[in-house]
Image 1 (cartoon, rainbow, N blue to C red):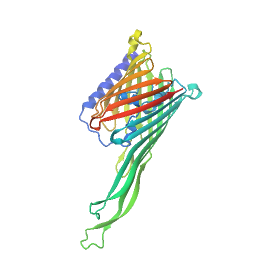
Image 2 (cartoon, helix red, strand yellow; image 1 turned 60 degrees about the vertical axis):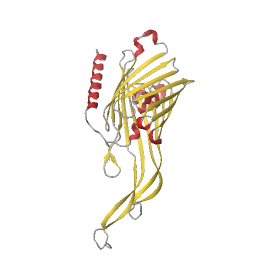
Image 3 (spheres, rainbow, N blue to C red; image 1 turned 30 degrees about the vertical axis):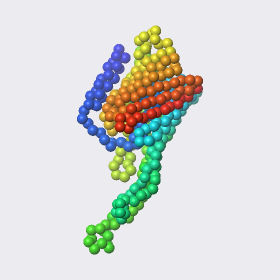
Image 4 (cartoon, one colour; image 1 turned 45 degrees about the vertical axis):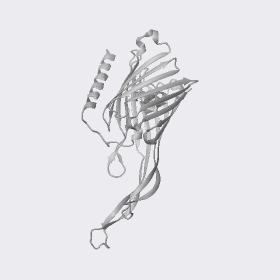
Length: 345
């Protein structure tokens, strides 16, 4: 009866969020640090990011920290590269280990960085014929360092948290100060000002939190996560926050209903419903078929996404090393490819 009640509540929430998604509500420019919401993990990307209720080793810190609590090995490590749009590169690293064979929970550490490439800088200058002047080549940088912890409170219920120190540097800006009339202008309309340079660099603290509950009915699992919670920060005038997201998830190996097919095979379906600060609600559906614990085939669908609703991927396991690949058609941006290598011992 408890399982049925929980299923009803989750389904009702999914339907409510799907209906909200259809409403004419526009949410734009309400968050910053958008690189925090870009998924680089190939398995997660191939399954449309629907990993809230699944175990994912150290990579769980990027989806639901509670998924790290059931780490089956003493050490788990993953490295990902994301060939994002506009020649932008995202890189992530995560590691998790169990001190005291897991009796004190699981500790994790993450690194997330972005290479935006190089840009040609310009500045308004009315004294130049073109109306601007070159300021040279500059680059933008973003990075996040995280520390996570997860623990099983019971054999069915797990909790986890992930604290990240985020740093984003958008270069320098020239700001006019002490604007006043030009005493040498006979018309009395011209103005002059002192100029100063200001650094566009912020270092906020971002927190993720999650829970995971195994119902005890076959492999049915519920998950919940809150990602990218932060205080309001600002560069110049307008304040903003990190891309906050609330997610509910449910997953199950559907081959549990077919006993003869369970041996060394699994077919996991995972469904997430996400509420975002800065764009409409989304339903995410991921499928993963694994054969003989060697090959995994994956696909996913994400609603309310103009350019990348479908995704595909494959994973291969050999000698304790897992290599995952994800391919996402991205509309006018062509495609996005992600690669992940995992190692456990």
